[in-house]
Amino acid sequence: MLKLLAVSFWRLLACISLLLGLIGVVLPGLPTVPFLLVSAWSAGKGWPRLELWLLAHPSFGPPLKRWREQGAVPRKAKYMAILMMTSSVVLLQFSAAPFWLKLTLPAFLCGVAIWLWRRPEV
Image (cartoon, rainbow, N blue to C red; front, side, top):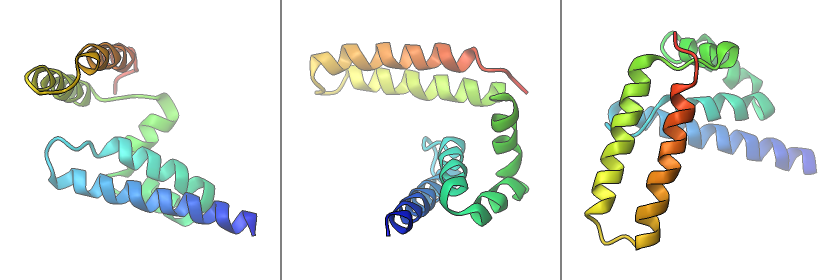
């Protein structure tokens, strides 16, 4: 029973993240690859056929394989991520968000940007 529950959880996570990744294909600003990474990872734990399909997909497969093999992020994706994070911080500063969030989120995103730029490129 517990194993069935765990498999169901991994499959649900794989489906939700795959759906978000597919929405990100057509919706600007919503990243695609991070959701596909989560989908492939969770599918590997509960739905191996979906994982294999994602890895073999002509569009989705190559970035997933590069990430798994090298932890690599294309330079264009790095630029887009930095642009989106910067835009978010600027918009946040003009919003009615709490002051602590206006200080904390930029610091967190700066850490993410540093981590991202230290990733290998393809």
